[in-house]
Amino acid sequence: MSSESVDSESKVSGNQANIPARVRRELDIDDGDKLRWHIEDSGTLRVQVVQQRSGTFSDFDGYEGDEATEVESEHDNWGVGSE
Image (cartoon, rainbow, N blue to C red; front, side):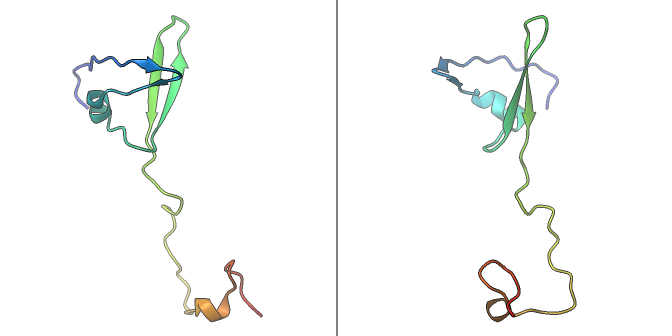
């Protein structure tokens, strides 16, 4: 992000406001990211971008066991071993 401030404005429609494209590019805001809104004691609005760059299984490294399994014959629809 550059040290130059980004000055843009957008229009509020109902309870929604658009994020100007220039701001989205500068802050690398993408679909799925969240905005946290903070109102300072001075009345200044501060917005924090929380980037969601990981999916549900992003930390999953995979199966590291020694034994291969036949999913269709050894597990039911819920992944539980069949007897």
